[in-house]
Amino acid sequence: MKVQFLDLKKQYLNIKDEVDKAIFSVIENTSFIMGKEVASFESNFAKFIGSKYCLGVANGTDALEIAVEALNIPKNSKVLVPANSFIASSESVSRNGLDVVFVDIDPITCNIDLNDFKNKYTSDVKLAVVVHLYGSPAPIEEIMSFCKEKNIKVIEDCAQSHGATQNGKVVGTFGDLATFSFYPGKNLGAFGDAGAIVTNNEELFKKCKMIANHGRIEKYNHIFEGRNSRLDTIQAAVLDVKLKHLHKWNANRKMAAKRYLKNLENVPGMSLLNELKNSESVFHLFVIVTKHSMELKKYLSEKNIETGVHYPIALPKLEAYKHLNQVSSCKVACEMDSCLLSLPIGDSISLEEVDYVSDCVKEFFKTKV
Ligand SMILES: *Cc1c(COP(=O)(O)O)cnc(C)c1O
Image (tube, rainbow, N blue to C red):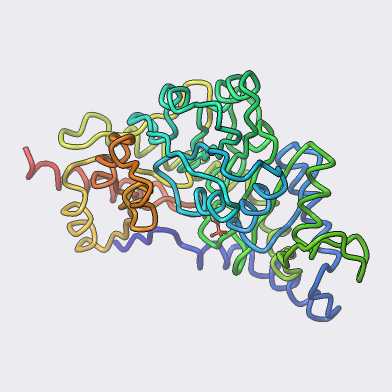
């Protein structure tokens, strides 16, 4: 059996008529920039998350950069960012003239470690970028109460967690701003690059909107210098169609994850991650932890099973961050990165496929003990 890491073709075929029609409607109306589909998707996505405002932007990285800029944090302030994430989480901070302080991860969740978060706090810290990694909520409630006490702004990076919840509240509604990516492989993915910012704060929403559209309020009335990071109308049309299926797709991911958790419980040589007790993950990724990750990856590939690694080099160890000298302050993340392996999961993976992958994983570890 061949198991793809994520089967986007199957997803497309399931919604082909609907999505093709939406795309051709944009083309027929030639409403390529800021067509009505953009406002429609923004309104529907805000509803999905349960936040007042949503702004579509060009991608998830821009969403983060614009969110950081909108908060107007004094230059050279410090910003807490988890050591295990995609580089965009920290890039957006440095590129706004702020100093990244990496926070170590909790080995049980691979998300930001609450104790280390508090330990890394100094009075120069003015912002935290909290990532809900792999679809699994970070301890955001506790982080919010700490940050309120210390007057730290919070951006939630929800690029991997569309619809995940903590105590029944959807992630992206806790922080001052939250950012989403609709990169094709995310739980909600466009047919190219796309992203969004959500917030309940009208002033921040307006600021983000102006930054993303050349600092203007009317066509040629620019109040300050911004940039061009609008959500493309064709992408908005695709996303608006796909959003209607997202609850169902997330449910399939959860079902697959539950099956993996059951199948791979107590397999010697590897361990599973846990979600926080008060939280529900949307399983953007299903990650296992093992010293034999690269050997297992090769073994599974010989069985026609695609896997991934998220992320093979912890952020503090990247060439881009060597100058920060923060490897030794994030020991867990910097040691665990060589032990991570992401198994296939997605909106259309079948239990049969999950069982096949699980059997192959178990077979591999039989040779290891
Ligand atoms: C995908 C991702 C981003 C960046 O999104 P793009 O749309 O690819 O720019 C940011 N943060 C995290 C955690 C991501 O997974």
